[in-house]
Length: 250
Image 1 (cartoon, rainbow, N blue to C red):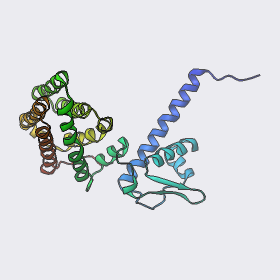
Image 2: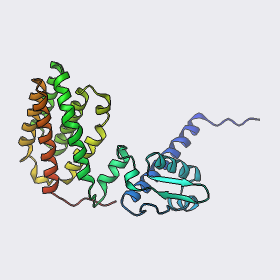
Image 3: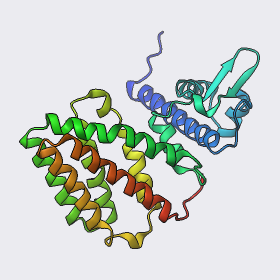
Image 4: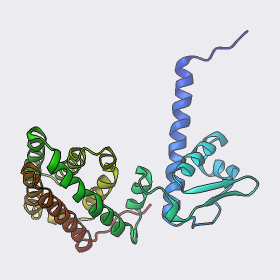
């Protein structure tokens, strides 16, 4: 007699295994970024990882595959799994970005994060000025109004991200549009690092600077849009440096 497993049970087992894999990826990935496993050192063997996280070997193997795809580890038969140098990691990966943003001492991470934003976001704003239509610009101005009207830091952060994401979209370039995770990480970091007392005091200045971007895009002024976006990013970087607040460790 053939034993047929109920579909619901099978789905539940798959979902549970997936959740366990995500958990193991999260724990090992964060530990690597935090420096608990330096470059070229070995992470624990599979049986040890199974015991550490109370999961099956299948879960461990899937977790390692995920981290390999992120460029963080490399496995060799009969040797084990070692951590790859940080400059070989996929820094465009959403998880890798998030893990960097969550460590206590990110070092040069924020310098590099804002540097790359200065490379592509002003260019995206210039492209948007050449391509955006009136409806697109109306959406940008509406987001500026949301920045001005926001009554909480959380609402302000959401409107801020939506504005920058919209500019990337209006560039008309799919590659630029796909860089939203970098912007989201940078803006979330600002939200976590800025002193609470800066809101609402600094809100109006930020909103005005975003209005300047929207006006330049609406007016088709590519170089003005480029410069206005660069100003917003530099001001954000300055706020990170001026307001270092403690953040929870891993």
